[in-house]
Image (cartoon, rainbow, N blue to C red; front, side):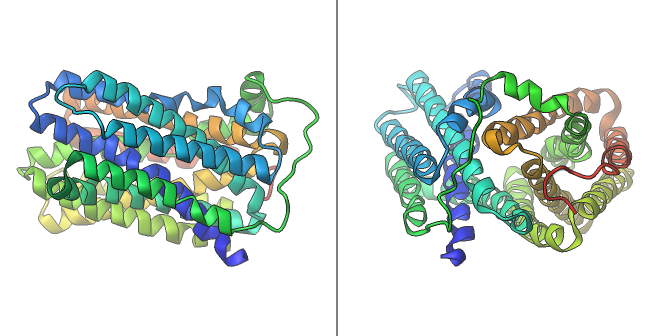
Length: 399
């Protein structure tokens, strides 16, 4: 049964990521084909809000996930509800039922976010300290692979199968992904003793500890040198003269595949060199990404240079997610694992969203070349922050 531990986690994480990628990236393409306004397409991004605000109901899941049976119940019910909403969406048309579909998509994302909280609790309980890095590599890799399928493969499948049949397949996949959870039986009942109920104040009390406050800087800035480049990569390629098909293949398929590969590889790197060393090495790679884009933007980059930059960028992002997820899992308190892990990841999401927004404004003001230089400086800041944070040993399981 030990051999099923990682495949079970992989199936649960990829089950949430493929439909999410479809709804957030492919549906806007379909909407544009149906002549929807850019304003309407932009509003569709609001369906992602449940993943930003999922920390609000993470304590509820924590309080009712005290053993294996309760955790499985949260995951299974969330998945079944997720699949049911996807099936219900298939009954409506984007042309005539747009607002209703958006409301249903928000419900689907709420179910997906709830499943993610419960799955994170499940992962924290079943993974031994030496397995956390590999487990989080699988989590990150599953998310990237889900994005690859959700954006590339499903867009192609839509042209052959149509809206309704494709959503039926998505719903069936979500249900099928729960099967490994029935087969895998952890060696313990995953019980945890709780002295009190978890509530929203625990979200803030987590950051009362000095180490947690230091980690807040890492959560905010570790990705910062990559996010701005990721946000502006496609506009940069458009301005270089690449068409949508070329950009989709180079960034959406090649880039995401590289991210998935490096995320899976990153789990083993973190396992063998340790959290602290990996954090420094990956941060230096992030710095190299900013410097590379700064240098190639001094002229019109060749196709080879652009491919190299895309692979370096996405590979660094895949590595960084592993070290952030692993150290975040190390830092949780046993009685509020889901809440603590969720609030840390939400901090990275919020900071990434703000950096992505401001990178567009900064790019308009100073141009791509200077923007990439600023991103390199942000990566340098993240390296310096590590010198401040990591001399203090992590409380749980670091080496």
